[in-house]
Length: 308
Image (tube, rainbow, N blue to C red; front, side, top):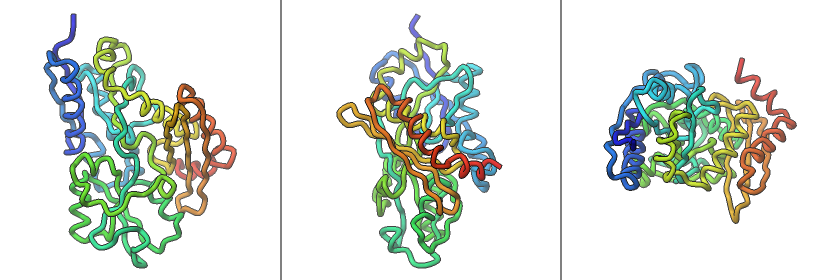
């Protein structure tokens, strides 16, 4: 019997709700008979906005409650920003669908300056990401980096209030919230390498729910899926979860998948880089290959300092 009611678990931030509504509309376009409801949830990460993610358990706290809703049957699917999804999923859950990536790059927002290079000495930049912080420090700029958490609107409000001279965010969220006019500069992936999966949405469901997998399958974007598989494989095998400065980004051209990866020390003094390529069907293998090269360069020694 075909399922006629579907419940989507989502965080309750404006961006998360937008993303869940987008998935809902996309599913209804394929399955107009469905009745789809959103189950909004406040995650542990949302409850502790005054603490850095590294001190409260990492980005996995953005998805824990949603995954529990899947496991206990409260929801049928959960929608996540892929950059927030831990590299290991709980037993019984899977990520069969990754939607087309919108924008992978990080962006620079400021009311006074158009780029990092324009910032004066001692300028304060807000970002919650160790990955971003270490790569900015590697540029040897005489600036101060401070943690900045909260939804996009909260972060921009703090910028406008004067708490920061500039902030750095993921471009995809700014675009989805129709705030593109606030972007002063897009960082190239050569300057700031993105987080694994950045810019793409993932749809998680129960591993044994074959009917649900079939229902959501049309939303999968094959090229993005292969890229994100490679990116996550690299992070997983190098030992980099969401609490350490690890970055990875893949692109596919003419079925050739090119992956670059990065591991950086907290002060930005040591920045290890590696790259590899192959056919897209070898995405996982390519990710492992880049991870191995980073480990050969000493990535494990750098990451050890973040796991104490």
